[in-house]
Length: 420
Ligand SMILES: Cc1cc2nc3c(=O)[nH]c(=O)nc-3n(C[C@H](O)[C@H](O)[C@H](O)COP(=O)(O)OP(=O)(O)OC[C@H]3O[C@@H](n4cnc5c(N)ncnc54)[C@H](O)[C@@H]3O)c2cc1C
Image (tube, rainbow, N blue to C red; front, side, top):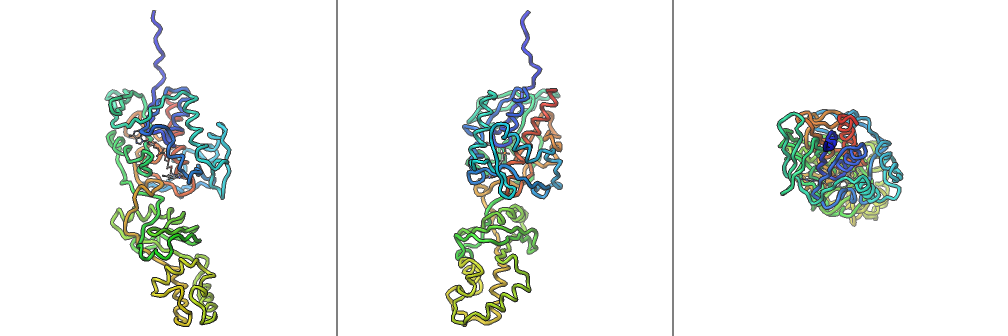
């Protein structure tokens, strides 16, 4: 009698070999499932190599629901299924990676993103996970019979799977394969879409007004103004280019402003270069600066307080220059200059491109997947993970954490359903 092959082990197709898909595939293969990994890039984990400016900020020791945004409902730690930073670090530590943290921001000890990407690739090889590179998935057909599985199409090739994990990312980083394909694939299977907008991006503003500050890095805060109302404020190192306000505080508020613009509302940024000063302290500072000699230039009067480029930008708005003598301005103007340094507003009148964004706000609504397992509520056998979903983290390792945690939890759910 011929020996029948054991066909009981489900086949899993993972579409997208980025942060989420690679972790999912490794966990599945390790649990003994048959898994195939597909990506339109030649090799897995390509984008991971450029994360954190080449250092990869993998996760963050401080975790709180406010570190992630989602459109439909509040984000809850249950969405992460209790998968914390220790779990993610543990996944890599078991495979030899060591970490260090700066104020909670976790990086590989080597400060090399390649330590993370190479570990994932090494595991894919060691576990002999079939990887199909240069394979762009263009269609998924769900078989009608319950539990009938899926046929996945990529050019003239097709793949069969009992389960599909859709881990195609969003639209941030087109050079690394992310151009929103996952959205049309998810929609073809019945899912909906919160319109994607760029997040964690510099804020493009009026070049003429920014000119004086181009190249400056300084401490300060950036506030998101929507229809003139201050929505959120972030403090830290601000950076200026000829056309944009950048740095972590600008990145953190960018998704609020791009979403506002997308909804046709007005968006602006309130820059405060003296965040530690309240009204009283500002008036005291003005009183002191008025006592400085009239022969001083404005640069000399205010140069010990703020960067000359910032002063140039703020004075420019008031029709003044750094080189002007103090005697040319009234006492009232001294306070006006300090107020300008504390409340400098720029209109953000265009949505920055996805090419400058680190992540995508919007995507498949979180309500359409089961909490903590990432199982589709609409299509049996389908899982959706990572940036493809309508979740975006703030700067600090929260996006890679989300992507990898969701990949891990989807794999866990499939493994449990397979009874392994
Ligand atoms: C420059 C930059 C720096 C960043 N730095 C950090 C950081 O330090 N810390 C942090 O937490 N986050 C960082 N991020 C964000 C983080 O990289 C992403 O949030 C995360 O990689 C998302 O993981 P993912 O698996 O969902 O998607 P991705 O990692 O984007 O992977 C998706 C994969 O799907 C593939 N794919 C897409 N469509 C198809 C298709 N049709 N067929 C086959 N394959 C397809 C893509 O080629 C890609 O490999 C950074 C992002 C950028 C752009």
